[in-house]
Length: 405
Image (tube, rainbow, N blue to C red; front, side):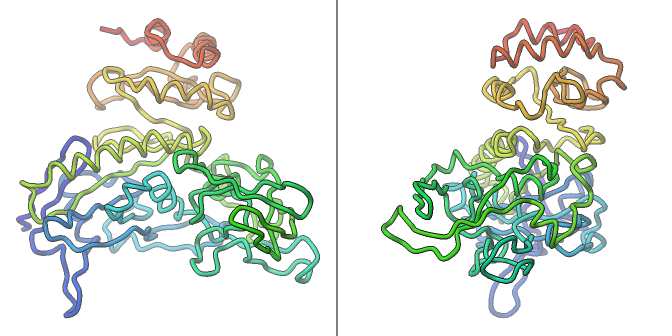
């Protein structure tokens, strides 16, 4: 039996090393993350798609990360082989885990976005659509040659976190391009990323380009040959994505875990991790342009059965108004539109105390007996105003059969 101390600090699980977490191979110390997950499971269910570990180095834990390690993959058409090591971890749910270094807090949106994105990107190759190399040749010039799994700086990736750079290319005139550096807080996943994640269908991915034969003029200006790419060029090599966008998850559950040598001295660090957790939960819907959501609750009973549609939950008692204002920017979700998503208020069975606000599919809302047409009208009003006020919340609550206190 383990003597490990395990305690949740707010919504971050903290595990104190019981002597089984740190392994020495005679040269260096490393962390047994499989063992850490087993300890986590003693107080939490097997409900999570990803686990993110943070090491309390001040307490004596080794330094590690940041990186992502795949545990399970059954997606075809994204350049990754199928993989299943779940039995080693004792899970039927987990897809992978991240290890985050503390320095990554300074570049959080970029680094967390990149490591999370490695579950799907950036590994897909394409068939050459133009002259230069032979027509139809397998191409990988869009991938960073030094660090595979990341987009090349010369790919038009819309300032994606899946590249190491933070800039976009602007075509000043034919054959001449300028770099536009963007702040980390503006980084979003590209259409190619969203396709690989299963959040966009091929018909919704616009053209983009790769710059070949680049020549630097100065720090911001280059000459190059522009080659236009389409998602079909990637499908020609990788095949279609399976599952397709209509059958792919749209939200994921992710647990944040701190590993420490001293649980009595970790509260400040756990608080910092909790701050990053909240930031990530807010950032992800914006980075995916309203198409994906992350749930980081440690509640064992939070319902995630409708994972093929967004279903993030927000406590009404502590409503994140700034996040809900973003609903107005989620036009491509077609919130309140036919076949789209609805903003509803609900009390999940055996779930967190008090009502929660959810974004669920229209189809699911109909199955649950909601007055869908009336909810749509209020949803449209919220979107048109680009804000949420208490009157709209009360209207929604009444339609969703929830009495607001």
